[in-house]
Length: 145
Image (tube, rainbow, N blue to C red; front, side):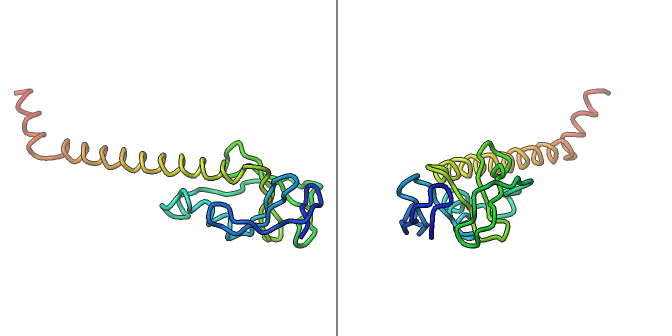
């Protein structure tokens, strides 16, 4: 398989416990569909539903898919400021140098944000339940008698 950026031969390497096709020249990498999910799961284990939308809108590029030669589509990864490319035929994703590490950083932050949101919702629900409790309402009524 050839690199879609510099046309060098892609080599198989292990990064983040995943086998991926890597370009030793430009240091980009080709991840098949499931490999991107596995990479994200290294840092985000809450579930796929909590990750959000992967690609909302795409724009064609002149870069070709290394598997089917279709023009790759660029997109902002999960609405973050990380531009990646995908094959419109769902063969995979092209990540430029070190973007795999950026995906992991973003997924770690996303997991923290989701956990913080869940914790805040739980605390708010407990507060509402205390406010609705009979003892609290009785004390409040007694204040105005």
